[in-house]
Length: 350
Image 1 (cartoon, rainbow, N blue to C red):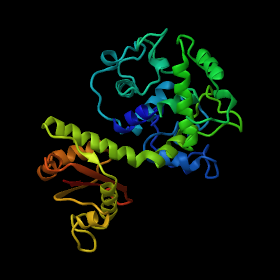
Image 2 (image 1 turned 180 degrees about the vertical axis):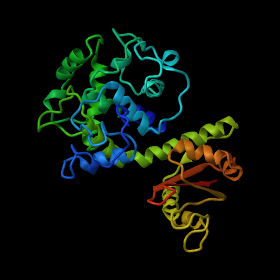
Image 3 (image 1 turned 90 degrees about the vertical axis):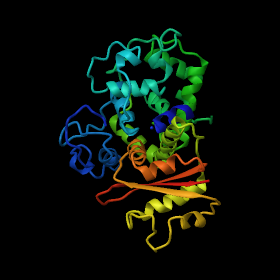
Image 4 (image 1 turned 45 degrees about the horizontal axis):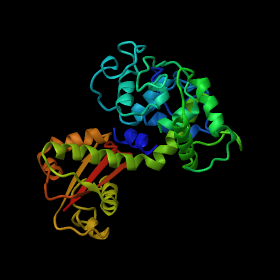
């Protein structure tokens, strides 16, 4: 579970209509008193979903495998991919130029898909059919995102039957069942996925657009900033590795200081704090001990990939990222309502 979540976060919408994104209040089928109106508004504003028309969201329509893959790809920031479906995956039923092609390549390269989507008859990533229009069971969404659950339909026997019915070509085993149980346990205990009744989770039921919207909003609220921080760290360490430098580690107190600084940038975009003090006083307030320190700031970049690329193309910022004396880093990020949108901070110490 952790492996798949980190893949999504570190690498970590719907593209079936061409409607201009609109707020939930503009969808006639998602009125303001709809139980999920806030979630629909949230995912549309973030660009994860479009409406199915200018005035409809179709909240109860099912999600296909291709649709959900695109949702997760866009949530991850739509990172650039290398290669094509034909060169990077075993799938032969995805036409060239398909809207979900890059998303499938990204998901395959980052091990997002459960084994029963990429393997057949016990083979290793040998399934040539992706079946983009097949419905996505609720259990697959939890898997692509070890405690006892109060649900009678996620027992070992029940899940064997679910897998056999949904994926008759796949020879499931105890490891597959345990993987699903861990995934739905995690999603349920974290408050991301609810039961469909007091005793059922309905893992085989096709997940709907509105259910994905709600779960993504909950997931983003719980893990969004952590994933951004991990993504920035991974990109920084990739750049350092190319120069033969040791990797940095994320430090909680540094990240706390960086988050404070990010919150100050919409007020004063400067290495000087709004009260006139040096940016490094935030380190002192967070109890950070250091011999040398540096700060990078940025605004207007929507993704970790974009902001790190911007820093690396700026001489002073690049020097901080590649400073051999630095050993730890903290990452701060806030979204503001002004024209710059996203504000980013890196704090380094050695």
